Image 1 (cartoon, rainbow, N blue to C red):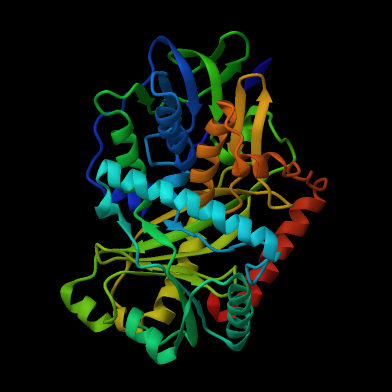
Image 2 (image 1 turned 180 degrees about the vertical axis):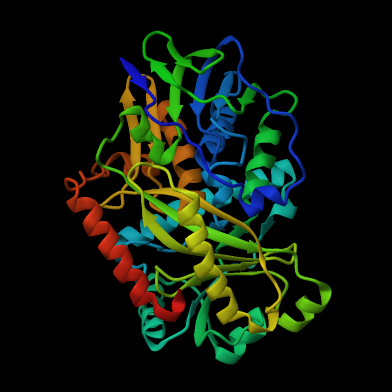
Length: 443
């Protein structure tokens, strides 16, 4: 069978996460034909977790990882860097779902976070990570009501959290904008581009049998014995192929009209001066997710910057525009000014967008497509946690280790078909507009 890429990733504008890192080494591009045991397409959270899992499960096997762009330039390096352990269903305004399903999801999420922490320890990436947890914060009575609903759900789950009133929250973040919040200790924060780049470097260390190639987009997959994956300048023959390209599964003709392509937008300030840090006050590092799912995610980073992520668009063509990034940037400036009036002279240094993928029924695109060809995508808005999880578990599936977490994903229904156009775009855009309007001050 032949899978030909109809579209390649082409993310606009480097994320602030990527741009504030030291310049990377010259990219290694696939420019010849090679033979390996495994080829992984996509070097993000899922692809790199899969590569490391192969090193554990089949240490004598050779692995080639291909990415269409520089390492950490794509979606994983544009993530807001929250490894979330608790229920966080983006299609529900208060994030909650069924208790039984959520308990299983928490178990899987923590399995992924534990795996991420083990890679942080193994590859010495402590400077890219923090265990300060996250705060779910509200600005209005509607937001407080959503927090109350979420808190009650967490109590039923037996999960710990700490309530903050307005004064207590201001002492943490320096801003009196929020009415209250809850601190959730199990969330791991990372500098996503630094994390991805560091893992890629560690996987290719001495004694490992993994090679990673950047700027090497896959244009065609020819299945057979072996399978052959072709790039513009070379090819990889392999016994097993794993596609960890999230929404770009559809670019290869897989899960057609079953994946919703969503773009989120973010801005990051310049580095705060010592005086500005003093004017802001609060703790030196923290992360806020909004009580309403359509609100703003805010982070204060270890290098004294503030990130604002909000604004959502539905882009079924799997790409966005500079105009949309600019328009979102204006909303982010307004959100920043409302929260941090004491930082009136601080401007946004970086703006970017990131592609994520949802299913109507909030399930992954996971499993064996045909003999020896596997997919692990559709992370439903939780790219760090769910990407790590699906990358690990697809390797377990491929080597025949069908433990309970693998079985859970294999038993999921497939992503539901989308409604015909133009009804799908009309419906999603209306829901996004209404959701962001309902978010009010949370935006």
